[in-house]
Picture 1 (cartoon, helix red, strand yellow):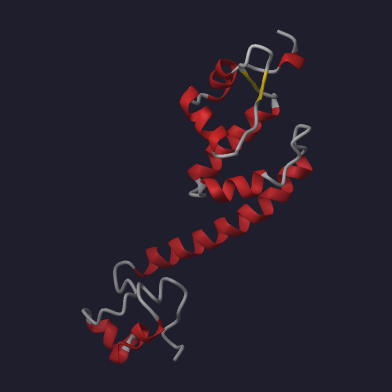
Picture 2 (cartoon, helix red, strand yellow; picture 1 turned 60 degrees about the vertical axis):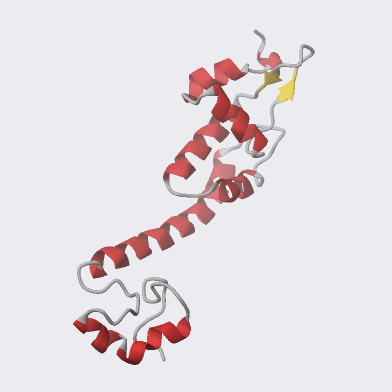
Length: 152
């Protein structure tokens, strides 16, 4: 097979470890854009291996497919992404990961005391959330969502 013929879906599956059905799903989601040869079969660029690997890694970090697609849409379609292209994407993903890490650390550090829900079920809530003032800011675990007890 000539490189200009592209890679088959089987070749891509073998290289990425993805099931063929997953590759088709990624195509339906707009994450990759194979072309069709004269026989109507999907053909992929080698750069699609990198794209699919990026999708798999980003999903493991908890990013949604729409978030991943937004970032992949910033990559060139006509050539393989360069290190600089990937570096630009990593800036946005790094910020999201930093926020997620901060939330997880806060949850870890407060899990054994109060989960910040404003429920008034623990003695500590009388100290951190007198008169259930957290509920005035909205529903859910207000303190874990970024509200602070010292805010009125």
